[in-house]
Amino acid sequence: MRNLQRPGRSPVIAPEAMISTSHPLASQVGIDILKSGGNAVDAAIAACATLCVIEPAMTGIGGDCFALYVPNGATKPIAMNGSGRAPKAASVEKLRDRGIKTIEVQSPHAVTIPGAISAWTKLNDDHGTKGMDELLAPAIRYADNGFPIAHRVGTDWLGLVPKLMADAVSSKVMTVCGKAPVIGSTFRQPLLAATLRKIAKSGRDAFYLGEVAQDIVDRLVGLGGLHTPDDFAAAEAEYVEPIGTTYNGYQVHECPPNGQGICALMLMNILARHDVSALSEVDRVHLLAEAGKLAYHQRDRHITDPSFADIPVDWLLSEAHAVSLDAMIDPTKAGNFHNSDFPNHSDTTYLCCVDRDGNAISFINSLFSGFGSAIMAPKSGVMLQNRGSSFCVDAEHVNRIEGGKRPMHTIIPGMVMRNGKTIAPFGVMGGQYQSVGHTNFLSHVTDRGLDVQEAMDAPRSFAYGRVLQVEDNFAPETYAELERRGHTLEHVTTPLGGSQCVWVDHDNGTLVGGSDPRKDGCAIGY
Image 1 (cartoon, rainbow, N blue to C red):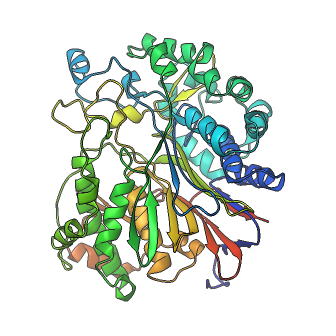
Image 2 (cartoon, rainbow, N blue to C red):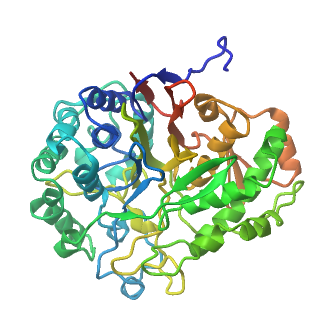
């Protein structure tokens, strides 16, 4: 229980339904859908669509989506992979012939075919109860009439102006006379509103066929891209088989590769070999750093689109593998196991929801980097992701670019279950950090006994490459001891990630929600 004399927020407790998002307006949209009879899938789509308008640096309809959905009574989640593929014409050889050795964030070759709308419409068709017209109405209203710029949204926007100014369309549409909109001011996106109306009326085909798709293709081809209308016509989100592990008696489910959820599970398997509850702060940070470096090494070596490679999932999640990785950790000294060559980024939005019938969804949508590629289609107002910058232009690398291939993905929804019952949809935004974030959050709750809000509020660290990134609220002696153990500390100027969770308290018959103070959002229940 938190000290009520100190700044902070309490977890939200409600009896029937709850949604948690990274923006209060999106949370309100979701709760309105739930109160009007919609289910968790309906609320998630409506809230996410709203976030695609009001948090445009973090997410958009030109991005990708993953989800884990547990209908009431189900014993495992339904997993949705809404990640996009490279154009069919793409290859290492073609890019090399053009002198491209690295796919830069703002290159047209970084733009994979967006998968979000396909995922939304498929989930809506199969598991929703309301029409897309009703679900997209709030997002359309905010895009048309304008929305106030929230504090974190405005702060992120300010730092991304140079990126927006590099694009002829984005510089005009997404800035105010070349500057970021002021926090508290109102910003409109009428082009995006018009596109959302088309999707509300005609569903998936309004985005992947016809004038919206052609607008995107024309823009990308004009910049040297290899995209075709056929690439968009063929785009299709798909259901996949979730993967999981057991941590402190809880079954933790993640989406399978091409996502990095398997990295979080490997991390949990390593931590499960330790009595984390008995460790000091510095020992917890050190263990998480060392386990993280080892798990990310395995991620970068093995994880890609499973349609293009045989990924040894069972072996990576085996006890023997966890034992071998754990044996490499020195509890008194930092190791240098691997320097990841995966590009750095941190921009995503995550939400989760449990409805009055007990249906639960964990839902994540992303443009990858801030404003994605910052390439905007001029007629439709669609900001395009840069997920293809994850590909390697190396014919020998498992994650090399190939036609129709999905890149290794960082965005990962999580779901916790126990004894066949849903316990918690949860997620942690923050690009690379997400696998560590999932592990750290669940460890705080299940090892240390923190409530979901306390677990989010706790200071964060992330070992990446040769540095250990740390937030500024650890004890001073922790920093000193970490440096003594050989860690090179980087005191981050922006927070590590953001998170949401709705925890089902079966004993008391309530829902307990948390939302990360590092973002603008909140949990709302009724």
